[in-house]
Length: 300
Image 1: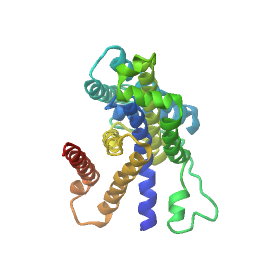
Image 2: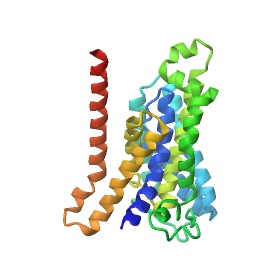
Image 3: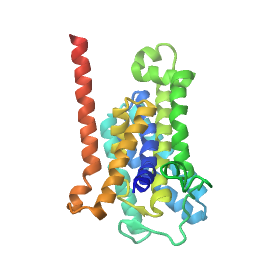
Image 4: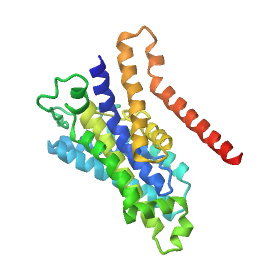
């Protein structure tokens, strides 16, 4: 049972970790990306269509990531170049994407909600010989796909980039004080647009991980709030890669737990399904309380 929960937690964490790392990068540039939900949906939809048309999961991953990057860039341009409110733009983007996807499903494919192709390519999972049968360790490292390992690698890489590269330092400076950074000749709008594109790319890959890695099909409601969970994760982690990823693991654990409880518990299913979101609210409340205590100590 422990191995099953560990495996499910890591599998469900991949889409959220990728989206949250992208959102953390965008937040470091000074933009709160509320559109992660829509960008994940764009990536999932584009990835499933491209993989089915080409017969290749690789094409699906590339197209889904590219579609997410384009969506992220468009949203960023509206915010940076047209001075639109980032919260309103993000929420509107999510609604528009959901409407367009639903329209395409019904008008082009003649289905309502779920789209499934025969012989749908899926991202293969890599079994490590000699490790797969080892308790706990096998559940952690074996049977994972390439997007899982991408998420693992991105955590230290992004931490290093933010600290040791010119672009990372300029991104942090832009988020800290855009006008002071611009006065030094830094193209702050371009930095924010690039961060928005990368955030969209990672969120799109998160959607692909959900469609081609977890489920093998597409449903217009398959993101199911994971973009907002990713938003909560990078807020909890203060846009730092490692704490953000750990927050995603916490949320994914409760998601995997609620799936397990639905088959073993006598509690109502509708109540059990709220468990991950209750965890999100509890973590955000604790984060806000901790921030309030720190401010009170500084004031004293």
